[in-house]
Length: 495
Image (cartoon, rainbow, N blue to C red; front, side, top):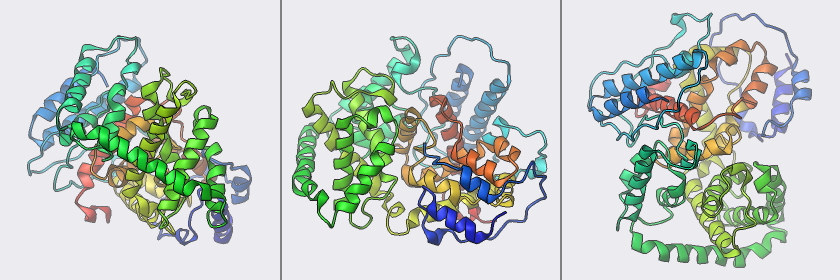
């Protein structure tokens, strides 16, 4: 293995641009001996590494019964049964079965005080490792209260166009009607909207729902048109006032970096359309100028894409979000979408701006919390990473910096953000639990890797290209379980 000095120099040059202050080694957890499949040198890793950016009806009934109950123990145990059932079906030989109808939307349970015993994580039941023993499992501690506005329904897909065929199921139609009724009322009940949105938002109502949940538009339906007009006018006043300064000496470095980063974004079929590139450049430059505490930082550029795609899809028939064509969208509509995207992205960044200030302290804190959390929920995985000198900062920095957008297909990111916008502090606090669930989701594969190079390359290129809404729903269910176990109980992070 190479010296610590060589490692530090490599990570300073990596695409994640990790601040140097974050590279200090953390105290090691005692490890068990492992048999190396082969030894790879750090020089080999450095030379080979390139930029890594690049449920059924039975379950529905179980969850509906659970969420109707006020007993938190029943709720959590039922969630575990759903996850175990899913795991068992995954391990059975594939058979052609009629596609089950999506389950009804269950209301979030209200937890009374009482004891709760948590079972093994979904990562252990979903990807069992033959060699592991039950003694390796670290029991989870329970939280003192149930997280607010959460539901563990696993609804398959939330996009109505992805249900197969052109006709909606009766259940999905009923669900869409619930959204429309909430949105059409004189004053939208935002709490009810969050509860309904947690398990996914139907495509036709997603643009308006995101604008409401982000805090961009008011709950009062009569005030929305005036608010939209005022905010859109305000954004283009910023363009007129600031954008011509992009080539001034004081701002040219910022604009140059934005101009370089945008073509590297995905999906290329969308981003490389000239109109889209220009829109993204304006949004990012104006945001950077108006937020001098952080300015533009790589990673912020990715956060524009989900908002823009959701809003543009309201005016296109393209069902593949990776291939949206804006050429048919009228210029005035594109202007309004640009302004709406800017304001919604700004609302999101207001809650996580410490991720992008000098030295990025928010990310430093979250990566450390992730490491401590994983050491509690799956000590064997934690020891395995530590024993092969893989530092969480080397893979999880990007997870926090880009909110997993580089790890998941765009369609999955949009589904994930449905829930993030429904959760209190979803993009900051709940994201931590999603990252923990995401890491231990690959438990078996991680434990099979036996050297530094293979482990890190795997963690930077996770096989999620074929993921769909069902995979995201399972991930969110496990994250919810972890949040329930650890939220409001910070001492549970500690051993």
